[in-house]
Length: 450
Image (cartoon, rainbow, N blue to C red; front, side, top):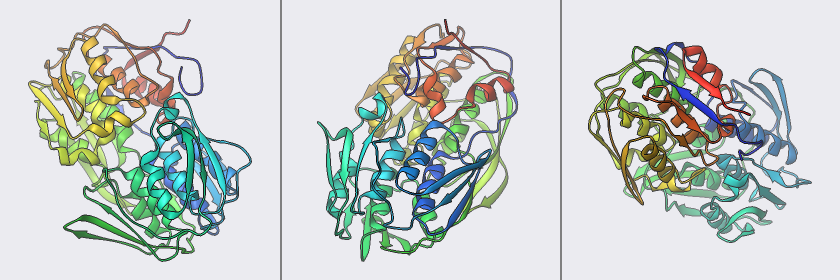
């Protein structure tokens, strides 16, 4: 089953070229953070371009449960009246975060240094995901966590009554861990310090500074050392959410592999900590051009022009790039299947603990579709079959994972035979308009209900 409904089987078939403008949704990472920081500020924050996928709507509902006023006032337009740092009230009911791994982990951090208790749950996929990497550093502030074996949801957090600042060296390159620690540090006295050996997406640092927090980053031999001074009064903001590069990855990839395609994807966020996929695609020979580069709301953006690229070649993706494109490896493996030669993706063990084990999900699906793959705990290798060379003709398991679902639908647009999904319902968690957008470009996607 998908997270909130019965399964929705889908099939993608080859069609003519993809052409037109792909208006992808707002950035999911920034949308989550906008709602949480708006709820922690004093006064009214206005957000435009918010992603209205289920993951983000679940975060909005959570902020209401903690006492903030959160209202939708138009299409992508939201208004939040915050309660201030340390102002969260105790929720009356369990906080249901659906499929939102980012949402639940950031919310845990935001409430962990307030003396309240909250219980978190979610769908079957989220309940299977480990939370120890979040609850361990939160315990250093004084918070306590009680959950299922392995630190899995449902899980109760008892916030620290007398929080202390921490100095934490992140053991994994994870923006979720970093963000949870920094959000917890907001209501701790003194300075909280987070050290990461590899740079991860820095939306939290940028947005905290925008809301008025005292935060600065140093590059040292240890890595990036981020220092946050606790107990600020955050100022409300007007936030224009750029379009999500992770969502843009799907029409971009489809255009690269469907013969004759020419697609414009406007207003895409190009934060350097998120742009690894586009760098990788260009190294593979993709016809991908950034037009009209500019800055909006403190984030670099541009319009992406992408055309069918019949001379894609396999490469070895540098493992140090993984943090800047961790969510894009599933769709990259699809592009790799249509390239000439072998694409090697190392340093990707983080994919094992996403909404699904994404390495295994993509490997098994690609094999079913006729593509030769290899894997180990930290590596995925795809042996490309060239333009139009993937046989297709099988049904893939999406495992309640929106990115797995969209990746295989894109593959079906260019394979010799159709590609089916056991359940396309999870797509709505991050990209509710995916089917309509791709159909508008010329793709053929059908729902196989009944």
